[in-house]
Length: 461
Image (tube, rainbow, N blue to C red; front, top):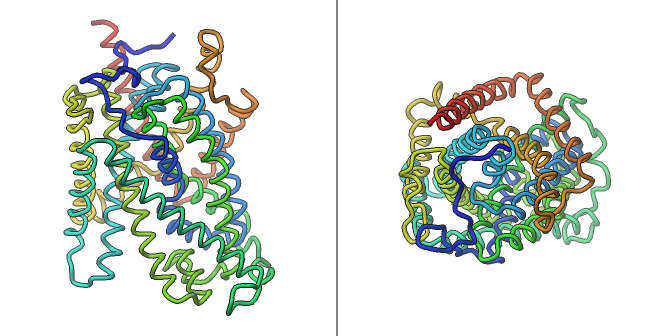
């Protein structure tokens, strides 16, 4: 069976050379929620609404179902084999070192680039409140703060994410309550809208629905972090099993529910939905004093939360890859149970992405964005294929490790793979996403080839 020549230190072995078990169950639960409620939901969903109209609810429901299946598969493998490498370690175990290399390093590039993008987005919000302040200074401040938090004990990352996620959960829960009251016509100063805004359900036909579907798929990215973080908890098996299970129904509530509230209350073609974001536009439409400005604070928190989580996730993926002999050994150095060289390297790459957005905004930066455009789909495909192969192996060798089981195996796994293939076809048909697909494909194939050459050379030595 495929296996690496060097395996990662099991998270249960706690000594001076292993990751510190500083994350508690409450941290994992909130990290799972924080991954669901990100900037893609608060801001990016506006583009999906503009393209799909009210049918964006169907788009989010379909992609949400796919994400649930992917997370169930990932939860099954992570509960059986907890690892800070998550899907990368599973791909290596199931397919071979080249697969772990390609999946892990492509995801590392995605997370590091996302750190820079989120820093830019957060800086723009603060600059809007404090005109005249340089954007780069705010990005630098955010990078220093979260790099410092991740260089310290892992519990610092957990506490940051716990309170960030708690604020986001509270804000979106309040939004849903206010929205339902407004739809029912019992919110003071509002009238029940009925179905007035839902009449033109497919304003741009199936093409608009496709664009909305693609936008919704990439808005769900971030859930994978909880399976990375579980390896640094005292009980990784129970931690990942509980976090994955509770994330399921919250996907439906937060994403699908909030999209339904937005398109019911606000005309889908309102310019404010894209310019302000659907949540701020809805609260302004309801005329709740100060609510829109408060939601801008929540969006800022969502960006900073994602920035913090992506620094953490990228450093742990890099650490795991190196521990398994799939990268430069320097990144595996631990200090106080924290891979500080990996943290610094990830932060440095993220800051380089920020500089590229200033220095080369017309060529290099868009090229970088296109290169990571479909990485999450590549990761999901590796997850599904790995689960197909590992499930049978676990059933034969250690059935007691199947604490979390994929539903209706193998049929739903194959259905999820078919859904991913359909999304890839849709991306190839759309002009705006075709370049992303090809760029991500080129990067993935290059990494896979490099990983295979490395695998062959190590086998001969």
